[in-house]
Structure formats: C-alpha cells, structure tokens
Length: 308
Image (tube, rainbow, N blue to C red; front, side, top):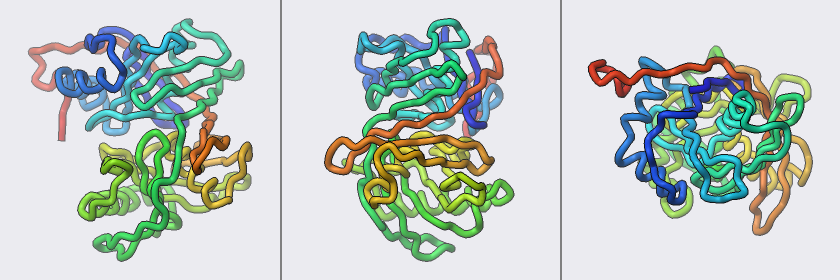
C-alpha cells in the first residue's frame, strides 16, 4: 500500500495483494468487487486501519491498451465512479514507484478513460470525463433549513450544488456544514431527485465566494460515507465548472481556482464539446506519506474493518 494526500485528502493505493477481479470491463470488475470481495474494501479503508475520510484506489490492468493503468476507487461505504484527488494520488504513487516519468498518461476508470499529465514540478493535471449540468435551480424543502435551491451536475460522480449556505464555509463550521449537507442529501432521496437514469446523488457541494485573494470560490463537499472532502474535490470542481460554463460565467480555457474548506486549492479549466458538455481539467499536487504492508489476520475480530 502507498498512502498519499492530495490537497489534504488521503488516498491509499493498493499496489499488490488485491482480489482477482478478472479481465473484463472495469464496470464489471466493480460489480465483482462489490458482490464477492467487499470485505476487502472495508478492511483497507475502514478503521482500525483507515478512517471515514480515506479513499482507496485498486490498481489493475486496463482493458484499453493505450492506458498506463486501470484504477477502481472506493471509500468507507462503497465505490466511486471517478475520483479527481485519487487520480492525482495514483499518478504520484506510480511515479514514486518508478513506474512512470513526467509526461502524459491515460488512466482507465469505471466511468471512462481520463488523461493525467505529470509535470516535472510534481503537480498533476487530470483531464476528467465529460461533465455537464443535468438540472438547474431544483428546489427542495429541507427540514430545519427551509427551501434549498441547487443544481444537479455530473463531474464523474453526481452532485447537488448549493450556493451561499449559512453558516459560512470554514473549518470551524465543519460539523454544522456536515449536518446541513446530510439533511440535503436525505431530502433529495426522499423527494426522488436524482441524476440521469434515476442514479442517486451521493455528493452534496456547498460553495461561496472565497475570502482569499485570487481564489474564485470556497467549497464544502460531503462525500457518500458522511465525511467531508479535505481537498477542493476534483469531480466536484468539474461539476461546478460545468454549471458555470452553462451559465456563461466561465469561458473555455479560463482558469477557475477552487479552494477547499481547509484552504487547499485546485486549478481548473474546461473545453467545450457539444450540447453543453465540457471536458474539465483539474490541476493539483499530491505527496506520498507512507509505504506500508497491511496484515489481514482472520483471527482478528476487526480484520475486515469496523463498519457503522
């Protein structure tokens, strides 16, 4: 296992010892992972070895021969289609292991191929999957909050994006912001508000103007497992930029600087494709924090993780 953090958000890359998921499409391998080997997921990212905020990344052989690697992302409760910070962490991990050098590398994910450019400085620019706004100004009545208005957008995961929440987006308000975002997500489920094809919206993104000079926005992103993203969230920033582009507030090639609740920053740009769909690029840095072997002892009562 190689641990890293991207803008404060941790990634644990499984480089050896993972389950045999076959050689089918990554979407099929995710299904096999979920149905046959889910205890392995829990053992890697849940306590006592992990934490709610940790994202796992299983390296695997790609089906696309043009790709350097395939990767399946997972967290404390399940599986992620794409993970921006995790892709940056995986690229830096591959460089740490000596498997890649600076340059362009294609990475296969369950929701499509992304392209990552490792710069000589160590930063990584990830060209994400096509992103778009699915619905604008959706209103829901949230208990204790009243009417909340937000956009539904895809950036590799499904997001509900809400502007200018109360209280202010700051680390000292993290517990209250978590509660607010959880109530919004529960209300979306209760009211049948989904992404396309009825897919559940599992990320809630609260955002507001940043007080930091030169930064456009600060966000708070609630992840599916109930933890908040320490990074500005790569897929969340992609979804946000798709909405900005749809509203004419972000031009093709213009840089958007997105700050997280802890003050870390991603830079993003988009290029136009068609019908309101954009290809986002997210740039950030990751740092390796550990190179470790995890032991899965079947006599350990908590071998497969502590699950709430």
